[in-house]
Image 1: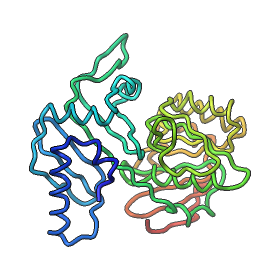
Image 2: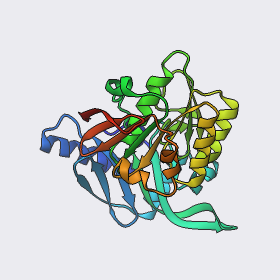
Image 3: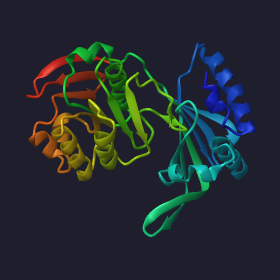
Image 4: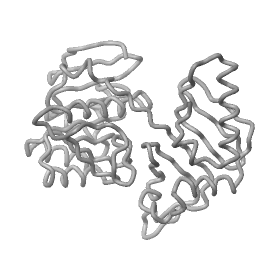
Length: 299
């Protein structure tokens, strides 16, 4: 079933249709469960349920009142309290589910002030996979990098690696969760299981957050999702130079492709990563510091 926390933030009409049609689809397909990953709500369009294999189109057309009603539920009738998250185009709700929004962007002094006249809502349903890194933990050491194309599970894998690290004695993990995707904090409290010895800076820029955590939390590991900018790279060099380890992800088709990027090539030139993980084609491959393959398996 779709998570009740997600159902509760939907407009009543959409909620009723989803519950009715979802049950009907399950009966027709004779399935015990349908794993819904996203709910797409667009003004003037039909609601779409996105699963890992298909789109399920529902027989209800979204209007502006439904969008407004959904935003009231999502924000707890206090949209102003989420101004900082709105600038980034998303709100995290209870349970760690992330609601992306699109509409009219209001600029102020060259920066996004807020988003109004919201016309699209994308609810990404949180699916933590506890234990997905258990088998590979023995191959991991030092600075860790995960590379994969979008939607291949690199954040999910990073999250579980951090959970395992944070449950080890004498380890201290600190996460810079710029877009609330790793810990999925709601009112400052992580909704995902990230282990016993873990601290989170939520909605903080990666480059700034890494240095803050290095100074304040005495971490063994500092973790970030989606390294990209030269500022991110500078911060990684500073924290690793100061004795902390980094665990990070980067978008890319392969490690070889990522190594050629101008923004991050310095990390490879200096051989920062002790362990590199590549997710592609249903396989997981792990390489050591010398880029020798030490593990390959199906995901």
